[in-house]
Picture 1 (cartoon, rainbow over the protein chains, first blue to last red):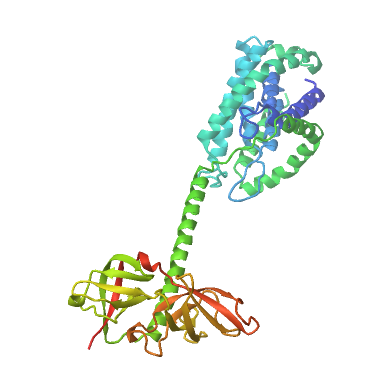
Picture 2 (spheres, rainbow over the protein chains, first blue to last red):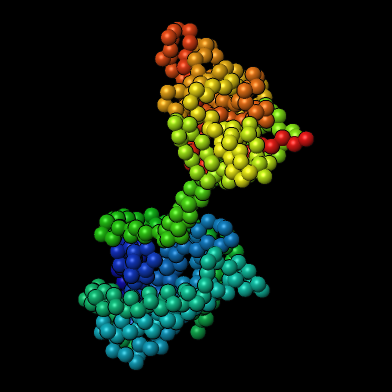
Length: 189
Length: 283
């Protein structure tokens, strides 16, 4: 895989996700959900890239998601926690590597479906790790205003929205496949 | 075959373990570790994300959420009602304070010891030959006799005349050619308030009294005129009762540089009274 292309694509997806969050949020700009472009990119790489490259690429995407998130705890200033999303995307990488042999990879609809399925695993891991921070025998440092149930509902709608956006974005990504240099190794499992 | 110590899988496992540990660090430490990379990522993506964010806010401005003022409107209405109630109570309090002040003055000047009040209902009013009288349903059988003073509250109404067994008349203070000595005093319970004594007489309109006083006399609009009959032309027990209130002080006199005219009007509409109290001396 061409890591320069990956870097550029990750940069654009993160910038679009951050910049267009207000414009694309639904149902309203302040409290709505917006699609995750990094998730779409990660699943695309998971479908197309070699098995040895996929975990690292999705790990990087996860770290970028962690750095773009914001939490607070016990009156502290807002900050980021590196780890939950990175591990979630790592689990997602394992998932997509297991499933991609069963699907026709060169389809935007496959991409959309895989975004949803893989995204479920990713979000479950993220929510689980962040919720476990509040366990008294672990960190006992729960996040302010954190509700696991509310987060699952919220992230569910994010996955649906991301799946819908994956169709047009996947079309662009699949058109750019030659630039990625995935090579013949990607065809195998 | 050489075995590498750090294979990609092992490195990935080590990274995953490190990330797992980082996920459960105290928030302060975790955010401190992520702060520099976070700022770097934000700085790098800002050239693209900032214009897009501005575009998004321009196309979808923040929606103005109308606050639910239902409860606030209701509270405002209740506040308005409460303020009205307060204003009404303040007016009543002011009137009560004035009444207390007048009664205090009456008590200071009136000789009410050794007397009792007889309630008498007014059966009618007549003004034969310009002689206004109230007809009472009480007479000598109830203790009402000629020459007694009739009052209403602290207001002087008149003098009893033509007392029969079961009825009597009250010659009103507004009878023609009525004159009396009064003491002018402001409606306050303060005993040190300025007082001025002079004589008033019925004015030509038959409803008010007038007096011509010195220009420097301490009489002003709002002052009360209390009966102060030093000559004994009125029942002694009527002393101190209010004849009326000063409604006007003007210079329409023969010598406006030295004198002023005071107009006094009774506080109550005497012909329309339904009841009066007759002061009966006891003992």
